[in-house]
Length: 447
Image (cartoon, rainbow, N blue to C red):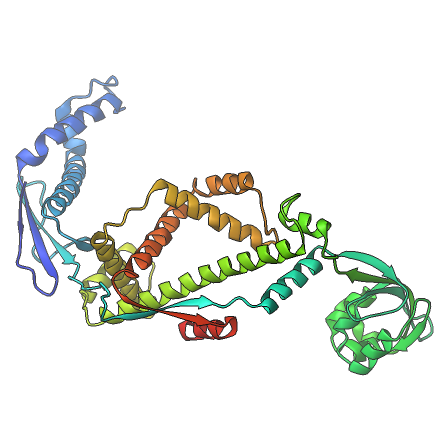
């Protein structure tokens, strides 16, 4: 098959393919012979239908399929052999293509538009400055985490008086004839919006009675309907006073800082004493802050690269056409809205690929597995499971890696992280210590 390429202009070119009988005849015969083995045509035994009849009935469609398949193969081969870094896929050029007439022609000239990726200079050098932050871990941060663990692994106990945060149990009786009586009602003073009413509840002792107005206390029909166990529409008829007889108080008691807490957080026999416990917590906070700092460095490095290649142009007319061809349901309005983000993402993809080649970056199987385990660890932490055994993490990660989309996303993240790490050796890096509060403010500029 003869293929010629036009001169590249504005990152676009035309590939013209001349398809001759020698390119497709043998495969057409092969397809017809295979069809003969399966064809079920009245008057002929299976496998005995004359080839001339099959050619007359199906020859055009078979020829079209064979030629289309061969076009795809030869286009891909030409692009690979000539190391063309194309954007999207070749698109048919109707204007330069010969009108196909299978009845009268056996040689066809077909043209395809291609778009080429621009050359980019995405490498950051010592003329480009990036800041790498180290978040200072303070005693206060350690103390706060200790207290969170105490809260998380605390217990519940009965009490006789009421304190902020307690859960109150009692009987609610509406102060009208034939009013509602709600036994075993549950109430948390922390949710009471009216300060005076909240303070009255906090002064109660077990067995005391307090008359109050639920609607005034909560200022929410949803809260009142839940408290009285009635429908929201019924609240309108019960906006008067209720008597609350306090029958029980449940209080959350923080865990003591002892061996039992150490075991719950880090497992049996892994922590010696409180000093060791606090040291381990400090180490974890430092590790988490380090990960956040690397994430911030990646954001800044990506922005610096995007700024550096901001003047690079892409063949946007071709790209808009390609997006519409590959997303038939997309409207023009949706394309106009989403296209700028698509262009930016494509620029980043091209820049990243350039840097991967420059730094000879390779993503190995163990890199993907390690990242999957870290993702699994973070997901468990979101549910409050701070220290999951390695075998559970490994199993979760293995299941994650059975999903092709998950694997693709992980490879992308690992590749980006390796690019950002490599940039530390090419760009000028300024190290800066920073408080967690000030570090958090830096992310406001990335939103």
